[in-house]
Each structure stands twice: as structure tokens, then as C-alpha cells.
Image (cartoon, rainbow, N blue to C red; front, top):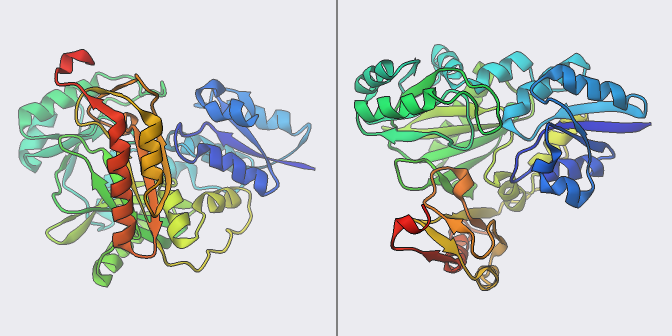
Length: 414
């Protein structure tokens, strides 16, 4: 009997394609359920089976599952996109299939509800306030900072996240966020904004599977006032004491939120030497972190997540103790993409570089990065030591950067 794995939408970069490939490798037929399958080029390129449905409505996805029962058995339901994790969990629960608690992941995705839950459980978090007006945002900024970070209560990829130096700027940015009725996927947004204290220390993430820590990741972020992730190092080169503190606070957060099924990605910042949870995402990490984990540690998180959705045990982790790093190409200002072939060849020639890619073609515009969509390419490196992996990624990035042509006059591309 044919076994199907329903993939509810996908992320547009990173692991979406790999979810489908791993499902096939595990003996299941992947079926992408999407409102617009054409959004994902790999559907056509890989000949991936797909079905069109309103993926904001679990009943519509259940209708797809019902149709597939004429051909076989739906064995699992999951999503590689954070936006659709609650829908996938709801459908899996309705079908009696493995998955996280739908109510828990829905609450977790609301950053305000998540903060309240973590704070009540004694997990260190930044000071915060959920506001619904400009005036409330300004008052919260003056009470919690300034400066403060202002962000949507529902979001991903640092979209709409900004450091605001004073109350008036916080109010203005909050007003802009509150005026948005839908996100980039067309999903409705609540009229709420999160204002939080700005933490100034180093940033990390902790990748967990269930309640087990897989690795601690050192994160690199671009220039303020935006929070674009420009690189990651796996595993983070930190003292044992700090590693244990980061791991402990992440597991406490996962348990407090009632997660503990499959992968979770917990973002943490230090303040006064103490780890504070910025947010927990009930999904695999983005930013090609699963690729780094596989290269450095031999643990395939994508395969593990797909196996869990299919009700199979996670594949054993390979005994590897290497290091991997990624650096993303971003522009400092307006410009265009130039000679890509030469830049890619140069980056790939660096010893230790495992992969290099550009996301734009010659002649396409570039601008200063304000969120993940403005990243222009990446270099991934692997080595037996953290310093060597980082250096290879940075050397490769320097060569990849030759593909950018900057314009002195911002008006040329704005």
C-alpha cells in the first residue's frame, strides 16, 4: 500500500525541497499541499506530486487526505514552514498521526503568549509588553528602555523586527506594523505588536529534538537597526559552563511551552552574563543550520523530522565532532549583481568551502538587507576546528562579494 506524507506548504528557501526528498528516501510518497504550488520552483523541477488547497484551513487539507485514501494511506503530515506548523499539527491530530500539540504550537507562535508563558515558568526573557496602539508602544518603550526592539507578534525571518532608539521611533514603527492586516503569505495578522527590552550580549540558538539538545549555534547578525542573520557557527565555540547554561535554558523553555515533539529552534541572547530566551520556534532552524549540523556532527535533522512525522524512529546520529560555518552575502547599500560565475568559482576554490551559491542573476538589483529576503547568497565551510571553518567561510564570502557592484547614488536602485 502506498504511504503518503502530506507537506503543508513549504519554506521558500532552505529545507523545503529536502523534506520531500527525505520522505521519498524513507519510502513515502511526498505530496505538497499548497494554495499556489508554483510558488516553489522545486515542485516543477523535481516533478513533485502536489494538490491545491486553502492551507490556512485544516478542513481543506483533510479533504486532500480523504482523496488520497483511494490510493493508499496517509502516514504523516508536517510542514517545513513555521507559518503552517499549526495547521499541519491540527490535521495530524485529526488523523491520529504523530505530531506536536496543535494548541501548544499555536500559542508558541504568538510571541506575546509565548513570553507570558515563559515568564510565568521562571524562564529568563527580556522585559516585554504587548501593545495595540502607538501610545501604548511609546509608553512601553520608555518603561522598558530605550532602546527597545519592536516586532510583530506573529512573524518569521526577522520580518518587521527593528531596534528603536526612543519612544517616538518605537511608536512610529508600531503604527506601521499595526497598519498591516496580512503577512507576506496573505495570512491575517492580529492588531498587536511586541515591544521588548534590547539585550546587548552575544546571540546564540539551541537546536533541540524532543527535549534533547542537538547543538548550540553561534549567530552573527548584521548592522542595526535591523536584525538580519548573516552567519552561523556549529557548534558554538564557548566554554563548557556557558554551553550548559544555554542548553539548560532552552530545554526549560521547550518544556514550559509544552513542546518536546520533533525539532525546536530556541534563540537566546546574553545580558549581564545571563542567558535570556528571545523566542522559541516550534520547527527546524532556518538559515541552513540543518546543513551545518549534518556537516559538522553527522546528524540529519531534516531526516529526523520527516521520520518522526511518519512515526518512525529518528536515524542514529553519526559520531562526528567537526565544525561548520555559513556566511550570507548581503549588500551594504544599493547596487546590482555583476559577474556571478567568477565570484562563485573563487569562493568554491577556498579550501574547506563545501558550498557556495548566489540567489540573484547578473543585472538584478541589490539593496541594504533589512530581512532574510535581502540575502544574496551564501558560503558554507566545514573543517576539523572552529577557527578553520569560520575562516574558510569568511574567505569564501570575500570572494563571493566580488559579484556585487555598489552604486554611490542610492536613487539609482531605490
